[in-house]
Image 1 (spheres, helix red, strand yellow):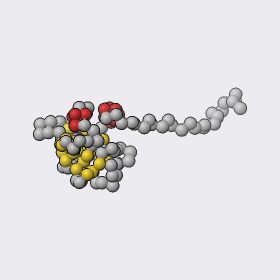
Image 2 (cartoon, rainbow, N blue to C red; image 1 turned 90 degrees about the vertical axis):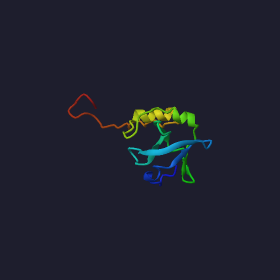
Image 3 (tube, helix red, strand yellow; image 1 turned 45 degrees about the vertical axis):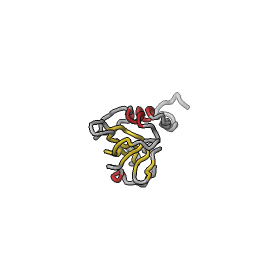
Image 4 (cartoon, rainbow, N blue to C red; image 1 turned 135 degrees about the vertical axis):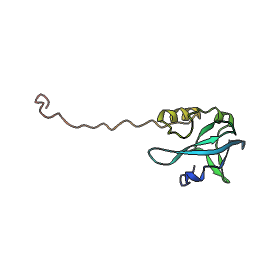
Length: 124
């Protein structure tokens, strides 16, 4: 997805699945905590339906609408975390797994050698 798009401009836009079937309207956009880049969209799937989270990374803005590269049925079956709240890392992981997207593993902390402890005469 284009990263230069203002997330406020996504709210209210229509969203369609991979085959062009309307999913619903974007209610909210969730930003990545570390980068501030739009990462998820909550799409209202119907008048009395809940919001479904979709990843923005493989999605595209096409002629003013969000085209999500997944089937509508998969989107409607996405885990329901409610809207208006922060998505935890565990919830995001569940969503990535639901959509079959690879999640880069967090790199291990660097191995640092801080030297010997002071005052330990046995270490040389």
